[in-house]
Length: 409
Image (cartoon, rainbow, N blue to C red):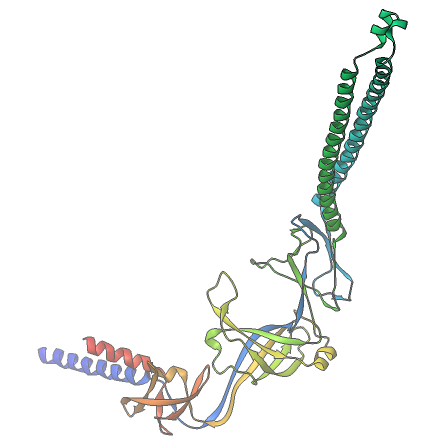
């Protein structure tokens, strides 16, 4: 019984070893290293934009807000001097009414000052005339023979000439004071009127600048703010705030944003097949511009994108009636080679600036240093390190993990 149990255990042990070896052999997928056609494409969404565009800002001056009450639909074709959007400035309208009322009050105040000045000067003029008459009478009796007049008559009609001269001087001084005070009040009032008039003039200019006109022919596009929202009827804006743009239809380009990690081999001159959304029309273009730096396109995502463009010629844009904002799909042909010696990128192991691959030789796996040529998103060209006909392991990281476990154990 003991010998029979021992035989069963040995059999099970050999069976498990055989299954383990078989599993180890089957878990390493390989590819034969040989010449093959190598094509790599990038498919990315994009839109048509204008190479040059004229910014459109909210009309008006100052800081008074204005309300959008009417505008053309986004994407509308407009002609030069056509009204694109219409605004209203209720605050400016109210303040203009208040300024005009204040100007009227200042005019009435000016007339009151003039009337008061005329009344005061008239009273002083009458007093001066009486003093002058009394002074002449006093001077006339000053050298006359007083014996011919009765004493009471002389006392009643004759006044002291010195007193009359002093009074005349006082009345002259008071007249000058009235004139000076009136001139000062008029100057203050004039300054206030000028300030109110300037304010009213500014509000009139604001109310005269409530129409946004097209500076040239083009397509009207709205400008999105920091959170992606576009202007809506009823929204408030400040003068000179960016409202939209008017692209130049003579220079249109296909604009694409691609993740920074997918830009292997992307360069100017590569062919791009553009398919227009809606009608499915395909156009053969080439990349005319690639961005130098990557940047995020949304506050919600840290992923950075690089922009590249492919320009349409004027005849294409006119024949297909292309417009900015039109969606499209671009297929960039990165690589198109016949009989290229390549391996999948998943077969490569990177160690710093060096690369290696595992070659399967029978039941053995050998690590082999390689020299890379051109790289693509899926495959890479091998310059040296692997011979034609070698079996290249496609998932070498599995072997590396096993070696790491054996080392630690």
